[in-house]
Length: 147
Image 1: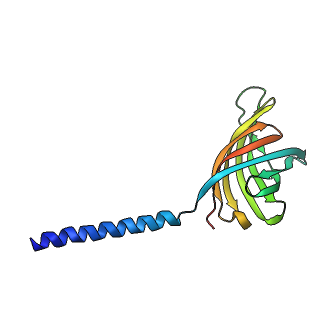
Image 2: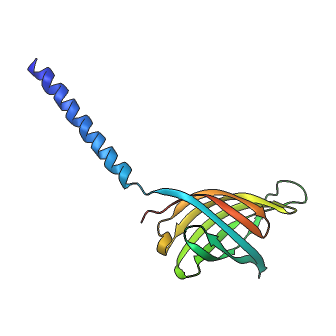
Image 3: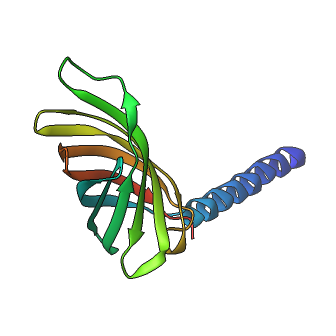
């Protein structure tokens, strides 16, 4: 009987420790927040350059180097490549995104993945969707900052 009580007590202690470890791990996890950005681009030497806003961070400068990708339909364009986003008031704070999308007429859409960041964006990860017109797009998704 005594060993049965010790066994139950041991299991209870182990369970309490696991709950404590899981709670500490969950509270230490980086917060996930919405990522909402709008970019206005223009053609500049074989890529797209522009300005925009990343909500919660401010005005940005951006460059997008698109290479060819499969088009969704005849008459449409497909592209993929990196987009670099730099805060106007802090040139050391950048995001690098992997972008893939399409444009048909006045519509543009696609997906993005945040692959790295520096400065206030250090350790950034995330992903989302893109929609708009070929030269004015909105990026909406999630952003996780580990620092």
